[in-house]
Each structure stands twice: as structure tokens, then as C-alpha cells.
Length: 423
Image 1: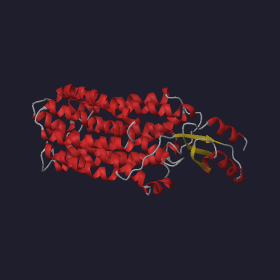
Image 2: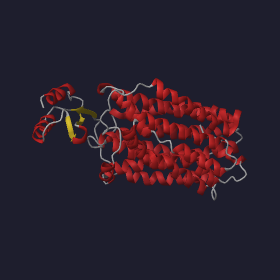
Image 3: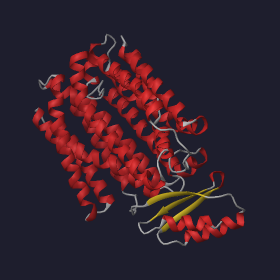
Image 4: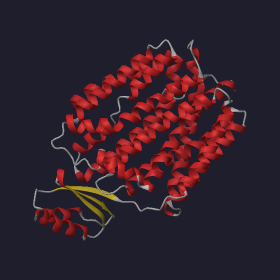
């Protein structure tokens, strides 16, 4: 809700500067990036719900600080505190704990859809709320929403009867170094960093450009909703090409849409034309936002998806921080139209990064908890599980007594269970 209005409404602060606006927009991403992995690990040690509650309280505190801020620096502090409530990993782990293995992928998909929907809803609500209650109104409403989540998490969400194997949901320090050295994972991390750098840069320019063209901030939602609906059509078209075009080619096409959109928006002088090019931008953004995590899931080794996704999320949030700071610095010296050319430049660099990505197939992931047994029995079982049809990779984690699988569609989970019962 803050992104579409902050660049314009922050001008009411006495110590306003575009650099501080960049810090206020991106500061949330900095603390998210730094704390995303540690908070996930803490939830493994102290429990999911206590860490989620602590994160919500921190977010609520940051929202109140930002809501009552009387200076840009206080606003920046509030945003940093908001980001310190980095509970995405703990939430995903809790979702895994309270769901059956056979339904876990659906649960994660539903959470992902909810996140995407909330993004669209926020872009529409932000300008309307800001017009009625100002910038502070947005932050106070987010504080209220965070407070309402507290009883929802503590009372309504069921308690876990067991702790699901964490290799595919939570990060591990021992995995991070090896994953950082993986060139394919590294390219995807850089990609999501650039993508969120671009979306932050985008929302620091577009609201200002629209206001300069005579579109008051309270009317921006009237432009955003047809843009977002049209971009869903664009996303559907791109997704429909999956069967005919490789994932890598679609990624290149999506980056191309971002380039065309930035060039187009920087070259026009009407709100209508900005809207048309913004449709291209969000079509490309939506496809990449949905498919980069899926690609990472295909590449990540068995039992290390949690570490890969934790690192991915940190790069994502750091990209938002970098986008805010870089855009704030550039806006001191260049017009919004000129700053968008920086977006074009980093997209060109991005194309070079993506060029080295290798095609992957869609995979499925499973985990299987087994009884404790001696090493010889596990060696035999590992060999038997690896030989099952559809198994791409299998990994045993001794501390969890768990086998992690990367599989193709024909994998039979019940057959794996039957083998494990004989150990």
C-alpha cells in the first residue's frame, strides 16, 4: 500500500529528500534480507507460533513508528522495524507442519496465490486510503491488520501435531555456502534481486510522473486497476506459451517486456500511454515473480530447497532495498524519465546473466520420515529408493531421519513408504 504513494506524499515532511524516500521504501527490504534466514532458523528452535507472533509485534511496532513519524528519518526507522518482522520462512514451515505430505504442495500454492492477490489489492487500496487519512493512515491500518493477525495465528491456526521435515521449508547454515557456489542458483538469485530492484525503482518514478501530468494521487487507483487486470491477461498468454516455448525463452521475453515498458514510459507524456506500457511491465513482472521460484525449486538439490528459498528471499528483499536507495540517489540528479533508462541498463545486464541458465524440467518434491536404523540398512534403502521409477535425486538427513526426494510425475510415494517400512 505504501509503494504507490510514498514518493509523492513524503514531500510533506520538512526534511524531505528523494534519497530518504528511497531509504524509506527500500529500508523494509534491508532488514527483511538480513533477518529472513535467522528468523526461520529461530522458529525451528523456539517454535513457529512464538516467532511468528514476535515478527507480527515487530511489524506492528514499526507501523506505529512510521504512522506517527514527523520526519523522514523517523519514517525510515519505522520501515526498518517493519522489515525486522521477517516471518515468511516461519509461516511456510508452520504451513508444512499442519498439512499432510500429500496436500503440502497445494497449501504452499494457495499461500502464494494469496500473496499475489494481496499485492494487487494493496496497489489499489494504497492511493484511496492515503487520500482519506494520509500516509500515516496507511501505516496505522497496517498496524491494526498486524494486531488482528495475532489472535488469528495463536487461536485459529491449528497447532502442529508434528514438526514436518524442514529441509524443504527452512534454511540451514551448512547448506548456504554450497548453494552460493552453484552457478545456476546464483543466476536466479541475481535475477530476483534485479526484478525487485526494478519494481521499487518503477514505483518511485510512476506516481511522480502521473502527478506531474495532472493525475492527483487519489485517482491513481483508477489507472492501476485496468493495468493490473490487463497484465493478468498478459500473464495468462505467457503461461499459455509454456508448452510451445522453453522456460528460458519466456524469461528472456519477459525481460524484454520490462525493457520495452521502461523505454516507452520514459518517452511518453500522457497518463494513457504510461498505462499501456505499464501493462507490458506488469505482464513481464508477474510472469517472472511466479516462475523464478518455480525454476529455483527445480534446480535446488533434494533436501536443500528450504536453504535455497531462504537465500532467494534474502536476495529478493535486498533487491527492493537496492532499488530504493539507487533510485533515491539517481532522482537527486535526473528526472523520473531519465531514471527509467537506468532500469533499461540493468535489464540488459540481466539478459547476460540469464543467458547462462540451463533448461530444467518441472519436478516434484517429497519427504519421508523413517525409523532409526544402522548405516548398512540405510545404504540398502537409499539404493532401493534411488531405483524407483521417477526418482531424480534422493538424499538422507540423519539428524531428521528423513529422506528427501526430487522426482518426476511417475514417482509412486506409496512404493517409497512400503520400502521404508521394511527397514
